[in-house]
Length: 158
Figure 1 (cartoon, one colour):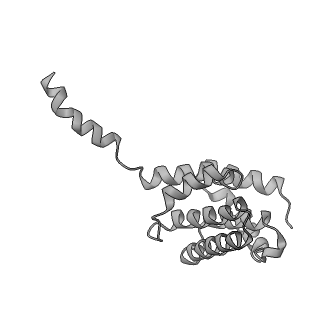
Figure 2: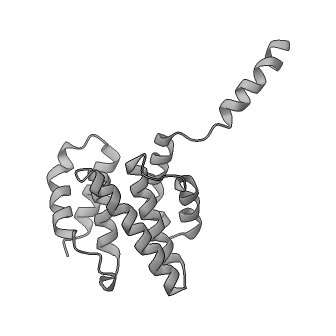
């Protein structure tokens, strides 16, 4: 019993440690599409990514996508535009650092496919789709590969 009392603080600190980058990444992959539909999910993901400043490039790209999702949830047109522009800049910066990252390309493609044309963010659709189609069979992440296949199949080229 005494030994358990001594070890209890160690278990408590292990339980309360922050999520690993891999855990946060898995959460982003799972919830990103829901962030564009539900403000509470966007807020939750943003809190997990708030400190991402580019050190983990893929998470930085997700942070940009989440910021873009905030624009969809605000009624103030100025805030909508600011969130969208800021998120776009972050996502494009992440892609410029790793232009062959299929996951980042897929993020951009799905966003560009779904945003209204007046936002002027559709310039990479053709090249991104071609890149996704050529890389899909070589991807090691089965869940991501299936998500890309499903999206491409269900959403024809614009």
